[in-house]
Image (cartoon, rainbow, N blue to C red; front, side, top):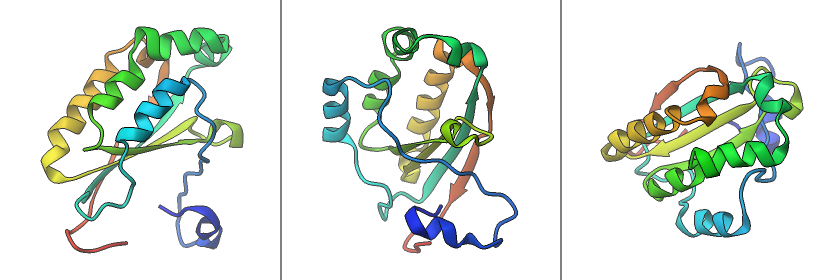
Length: 153
């Protein structure tokens, strides 16, 4: 994963690249944002030797919904934020938006966690995949990564 200006230095070193940008939090209220910020740990923790990258594309039906309807499904019906809060700080996460860049995936969801939280991560994604919101997911790829403890990069 390359961030900021480091991402521009790939220079063909990778056959495939997924691009996304961090953006404004489109479906989050101020109180939810404050709750997330209070519990969220930073990425790159030494003990977080496992990660998951899950690129997601939502259907055109999702994007045709008005913003308030997407918000209703996202949180009021599917409890997306409330569910995620239950797993913080054990599972660090970051959302990257690709739709506005006309990329193949609308979202790149990145998670990092320690091995002892792997079952909790599985529970988190299972719960999210059972929601009304997930009915709008057209495509996802679940990529798992592992790093030896004590090694960075």
